[in-house]
Image (cartoon, rainbow, N blue to C red; front, side, top):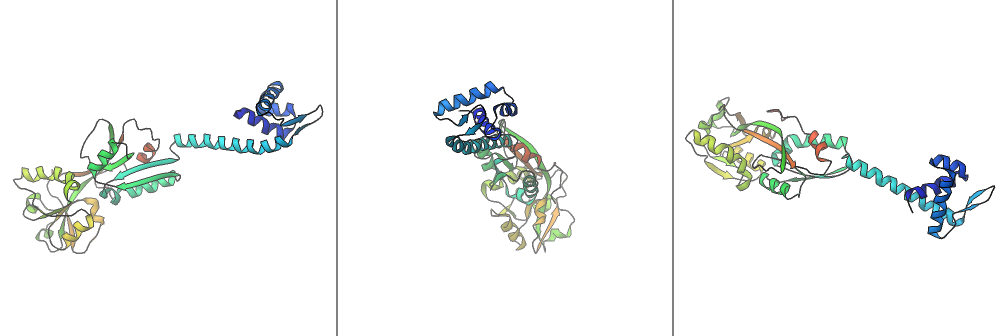
Length: 298
């Protein structure tokens, strides 16, 4: 039994005339008769009673017609589903992201993507960059919004955002009197930063920056969540080096100053995915991410 045979049953049941049904199907009348004869032989029942004057559905044919229409509907739906999936209009996409991405590019990208592809299931998970890197390589996520902590030839990457760092200072800190602060100014004070692997990117950028000026990064406290870091800054425990987009997290008793050093590092955010990945939704989501523009985080 094939789709053509089912279509022949449906069309003939509507026309009850072999010549008219054959015309609608775009085949000859003998070809239509052969389709039906083969189907009835395979089933072992007669679906139509034929005479020189009339063509009628048998009782078995009436019941078969209901199922034939349902089967054709399911076939058509399966075809539509496959085509929509190939276009990236349905399916699922797992995206990992670093905390900072949720403050700038991710909300806008998700909103734009959902407007275009409402039937796609987006699965979002916050992780640190080193974990995102490993999960991409082991195919446990499809895409990652992460810091460029490592490289691998099996991954494709695209810069999403490059923004300046700012110093978060207690409101009564001596350096708030300056419009911008230098690393040499900050070196005398304790730095509040994320703990362990979460601080990999910040350490990799600023350790050498401090060292070139003859200083060490003096870490006072390590906590994992950004609100906790800002809270410690507001309490006067020390200062923090944060991407400029973190300024949107307003807090009492905290002020932000840009870095005066012309060679100060930037906080880069990239999107990464596996080369040759077959999920067709990857590109549509990547297209919803912003064009890189330094400082464009609002």
